[in-house]
Image (tube, rainbow, N blue to C red; front, side, top):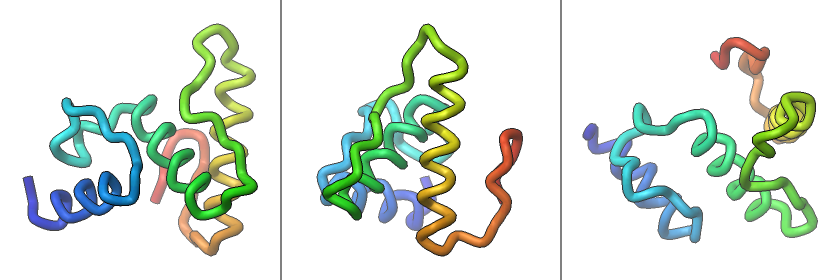
Length: 89
């Protein structure tokens, strides 16, 4: 793993972000883990936020809404890249 990825993952863990043991690099972040990590970070940044840290398995509409809400909050924090459905720049 690159040193920068190790620093990132270790920093997240030191902040209390739960990262599965199977994740040893950014490439290991599957969609479920990425959503959970983003939600935990946003909840940490804003204690009044209550983003769910897991996606419901039974409702694609709910999954889409949660991801849209996460993306909106990240954009509101100043992210200027594209966060469309199929790609993140």
